[in-house]
Image (cartoon, rainbow, N blue to C red; front, side, top):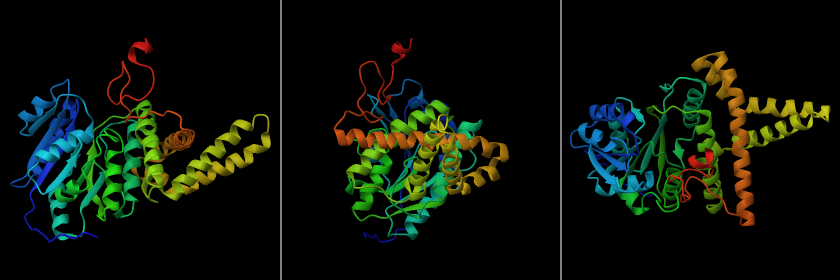
Length: 359
């Protein structure tokens, strides 16, 4: 464990990677400016946006850096960190709004806990986007982080802070292997392996502004979460029993696959309805706290509507992890959100038909 002497007046730099983020910046930067202490700075790294992201950020008082080619949040955050003046690097996504007092909370944490090198928070339970899918997605993230272990084994780049010394010591974000997806998780793994400690502060919360659709949720979960995370865990000898990959979640994935397979086979073999019902009932039981949370937050109809969404989440996540491990074992090619773009596709666009092909 690496310890640091306490410093009562730590300088802080907020670093925001931003690609075509103009719709969110006014709310995001207003909250940060109102919370920023004397001597702090806000750096927006314009990741080759084609909208007015850079000019808007500059007009709102942020220090703006620009990448000429769209390179992903890893490179953008690394550029911001390299130009930052603060001892604490506070990474915030462009599409979140921090709660009042969040910056002070981060500084107080590092001053009071010299044994920790990083701290991160979560989305709050008040996402702005309406509709079942965006509410489900954001509330699920909130719940998972609120149930996580305070002594964390990962990191979250949407609202997470790191001591500059620790960030530099491990080489920052891996912009070569993880330019766009799970780059924050991978950084957390390296911090822990180097003897650094990370804290999940459940009171450090931000409001998410993004509006999810079912298609964007599934696409992101498969190509920017499941596939690269499966690769990372295989290369690192497995992940921690926490957050999305704790034992109860792995069991839920297996039971969901079993239950749905039995349902399909029950057409010619009706007796399989019994194991199908038992398996799916077990999934609901394992995740009862989540569904009770949905019920408390948005009522019974919302909680019921989240059941098929969550079963779908377990199904495609399990299939993605399994197919990734099979492809890696057989040496088959595999692409994800970190793969270099093919001709005709934008940077980071997952495999699939191009816009021209769709026509």
